[in-house]
Image (tube, rainbow, N blue to C red; front, top):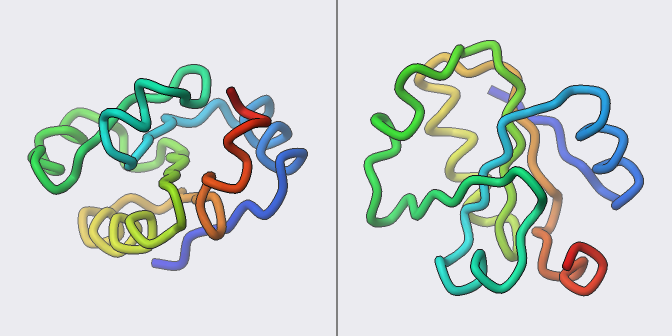
Amino acid sequence: MEAKQIFSISELQDFLQNRQPLIVDLRGRSEFDLAHLNGAVHLDFVHQNVVSFFEGVDRSTPVLLYCKNGTRCKSMVRLLGTYGFDDLHFVANGIGLWQEEIS
């Protein structure tokens, strides 16, 4: 499964407006609590059961993943691909560099 990468804030804004994805924040709880994208849900994939988290989500639903630097996203893309998700997107290099602009 090859996910589509989002490289800029304008690209992210266009995607959010046009696709209305499930937005999943993969950062730590304290980072999520500080600031997150509107409509995002938090998933701590180290401590939460990923399968049960995505249970009931239509596999064709667009999913936007983001984390601090992109590493967790790449792991999650591989995992979700094995469960049949085929419309995956993630913020390239993480959202850490955009922190001030999204808060």
